[in-house]
Image (cartoon, rainbow, N blue to C red; front, side, top):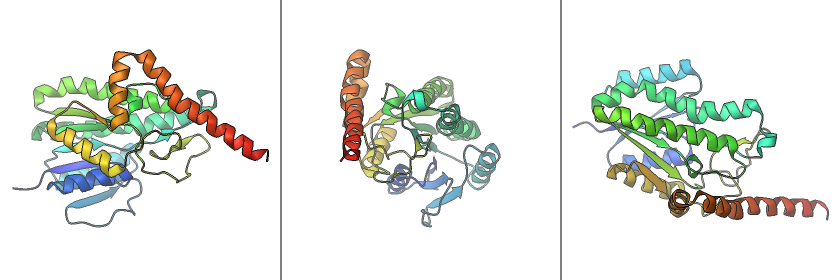
Length: 268
């Protein structure tokens, strides 16, 4: 019996690689998509394809190549994404649109390519969202908006695909330490995920991947990933106002204190 086949976008990132490792340990064959795949080593049960997901021609070519070699696809994980950190007053329209192109439109375009294959296999769409996908997050207006859109799309798709025997699941991690210490934030505030210095209670990519795969196997429609995500999920559902206050106290105040510390150092 051939191995089940999973496709992961953003497969070269920390969480993408951790998900790949977790699934491979359970006998899956992995196909990883990313712009830069040089960090991925060759493995017999893993393939890597270089692709800019925001380039519709590249994406169509990559998906056609995958389906030509693997007619049966059992799982697609929409993991590629970027964050954008900074106040809305500094957010440019170009940066706002770029965040949506990567976090939302690339995922929905990819879902269209794998719609029929997943229907044929009765497979699963798994979208990697964020706590910012169901709640507000300080200095993340574009990021939170893109993740809210992602969740809205896949929650709506769930109802459409259920009659075809297809599951649609969403995982919502809090802060995953995939790029801590890597100062790669661009002038427009866009950065690799997991690089934020104002995070709370970070998870390792490996721990996050284990929680996500466990939720995947159990068929949970929504998978809060980590203690902070679980608390945020329940508190935001029970009292959005309380969640907003707690979020501002834990993240906004921390951010303001860090800025004050930097300004104080500059006066020495």
